[in-house]
Length: 371
Ligand SMILES: [Zn+2]
Ligand SMILES: [Zn+2]
Image (cartoon, rainbow, N blue to C red; front, side, top):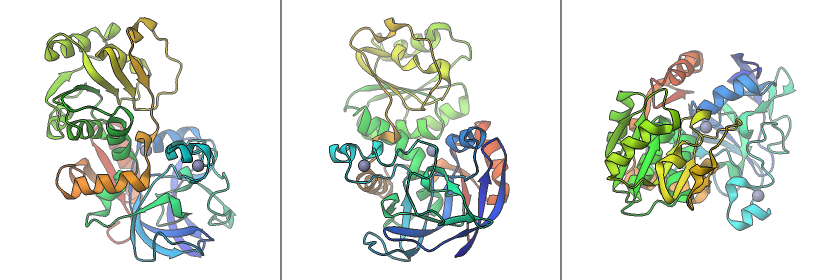
């Protein structure tokens, strides 16, 4: 058993740092000493809405501390990045190549123990406690399945590695894997926070020539340009029928709307907005995971428009994380610049406050030495 400080939420809006015990890894499992954990809007939502106790956090990177029987992919001392959609490798979806929607993991069930990482691996006052997405990265130690990590072979700060596991993957993958942005194309990106900036990076690396960033905040538009946006549109808070942003995008593109548009705001009223920004036959992508009931004008789908709602940038972690890391290593994908501010477990409230106020692209909590 390892003693570990961890951020535990009651799922009703409360959270606090508690001491937990983390057991030895069972067969096929590994214990990770977490060194950095990214903060994500999903963490905030889960703290408000999951209505049960759990260890918070689903973005993380650290060092393998111990491995269970049969583990071959990593060894103690290896640096790793965690992934929250943990594929089984044998179900229908995994065999079809869609490991992000593995049928046996149900990554977004939010119900916790789906039989992953043995019960008792994580104890709070002697009782098992669930972990966000079977990870619980806001803890000094965690036990996860071997399939929940990718080895980190590139020299880089843990703070930059941690964010690859959700925000970077979701944005970059939505452009590269899901929309498959073509060279020479035009792209509109609505919302330039951590995920939106990575859609922009993915689109730019795919060869899009015009990338229009749209945001309510001037400073975020300026940052979007540093990540590859060619144009910026200052959005209006009230914009009936998306008329303002539509006119601005049409003006920039010389009449025809964009080939691709991505929604990265999590604002329900903007769920249909990417449809308004694409040409006939264009691809509208809802990246932010809006789940509310939203009235849609079906005319927005005319003509031949495609609307997709990819999960986790259609992540295949063993394939995609190394691609992202080699782009970073070659200087073509920015990660260090995304980490606006770092925190400790004790200052995590400030991190959530900065995130919710839109003051940071990504906030990262450092654990262990330096945390
Ligand atoms: Zn996330
Ligand atoms: Zn599977």
